[in-house]
Length: 223
Image 1 (tube, rainbow, N blue to C red):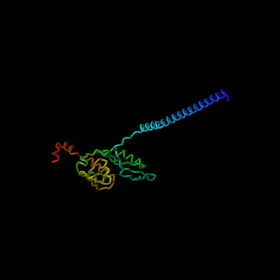
Image 2: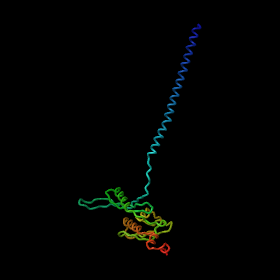
Image 3: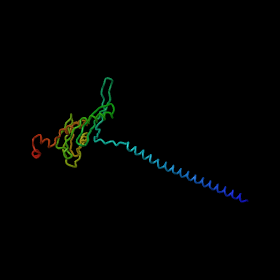
Image 4: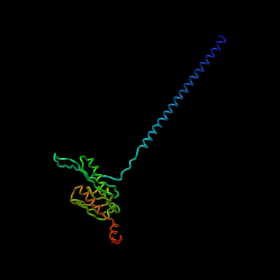
């Protein structure tokens, strides 16, 4: 081979080596770009999810719990005779209270049970009474009456609990009384027992109020 042919072969080999090197660098740069893009996508996805989660957390509003509590005492089926036959409805008796000295009894009728309970709750909140509480019990002994029902309430010492049954117990619990002795006499109707208990609680008086009305001091009243 001549010198010119050798030079031509060396030049062509150098050019092919440079082309392969450029192609390899281009592939590496493309690979780096692809890796960068994938990393950006991977890093962006959880950020979007976190943003969406934060928005969801912010939009969720925590509803405040109501201090009023309700307890259904009785649901009875009532029939009314009308011109076309008999009309069926439901009567609900519900006790409403906040366990802080306020309690009420509601009674309502409706064609469906849920509607009757809702109406009874509204009726109970309209007829709330304030109960004087003296050291987790009542100030003095009292008797309440409603129809043929009669309920006697007597104060009790600490640790006694609520000694009551039927509709009398939920009324005292939702009123906030913790220690008391009771005796239900006469009618066994839950509605009469609840109204008799409300009548007794309404008639309670604190010692300070009685002393002021009589113009006496607490020592003179107690002696």
